[in-house]
Amino acid sequence: MSWDPKTMEILRLAQELIAIPSVSTAPQPRYDEIRRVARVLRAYFEWAGLHVEWLEPESATYPALLVFFPGQEEAPVMWLGHFDVVGPEPDDRQFQPRVEGDYLWGRGAADMKTVVATVAVWMKDALQAGPPYPPISVMLIGNEEEGETAPVGTREVLAWYQERYGTLPSFFIAGERTEETGTRPYGAICTESRGAVRITFRIQGRRGHSGLSQAHQDLTQRLFHLQQAIQALAQDMLTLDTEKGWYSQIRFPFVSVGEPGLFNITPSEGVMGLEIRPIPQDPLEDFLQALEDLALEHQVDMQVDSPAPGTQCDPENPYFQALLQALEDAWGQPPGLCKKLPASSVRFVPQGRSVIWGQSGLAPHAADERHYIPSILPYYQGLQAYARHLLHLTSPAQEQA
Image (cartoon, rainbow, N blue to C red; front, side, top):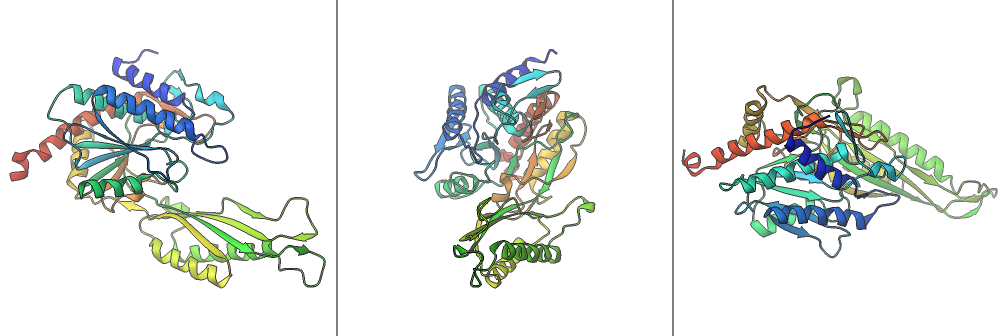
């Protein structure tokens, strides 16, 4: 199938990015490849003439990037994306991108290297068009898929940004896909999204003969009782009714006690993971405090990683209103509004200042991951229209008015 020249340009860059196996998740992260895709993006932006900040503190395994138009280091809008992916399924053939019909196939095609390529090409074109430049900056991180639990993710980049410029942007857009069927060209704007918290519970025992009368208490049973108590607590404090379509979620992704096949020795430690994805209507701090009390009661250690509540955009935010108007201008119809179940980087930004707006894709993290190509050009055109609206919104005459 033949595509327009702009879509073809974006597809070429997207395929170059997909071919780099920038896996950030266990059990086999590929840190060198994350760094390699970051270098490719940096080279592209700097070749285009854009200013790039390469952020990599000593504690980081790989970098994050901030990209600016000239004079727009303190732009009021920041677009958020990531260049890491989860592991391939079933093997590295998924890093061989291919176009078939309306779809670009490959790991990261839908999540989210195609939209990163779209924004990169749009920034290049906007710079080449000359001033005034759009008041938008771009943040790209390499650890979104592993939960941003290690440096350097959105939280650390924003801390650096605030220290450097003394402020934070007024509006954030995460470019994760927002058209989930893979059949429509227009991505909706998700004004609400769930947060994410990852918790590890550790319970201590003592190795010894399991058949003796003084054998240590069964750690498996203790973890099972803890799991039941957590489920009951969540039922009381969180919105878990899936029939309503907008709900918080808890799951226990792993439990580890003892060694398979070793029956007659009591284990010295048990570990259980808990993942919470709260909607913004459920107070996360109250639930975490209740979990701490529960852990104390059950005599287990509780370690919390990157707690972040759900997000909800202020409908009166002028930059959000400008996005609505811009997309209606570009597409000839109002954009749809939605709520995003998967968490994204916006959970780390100030409340009320963020949305998720992306393209169309199918099966992220799965063996048949693919991106719907007809959604690329409308997104590019939406960015163009948004830039015009932002320039009007932030012009001196508009500010005086």
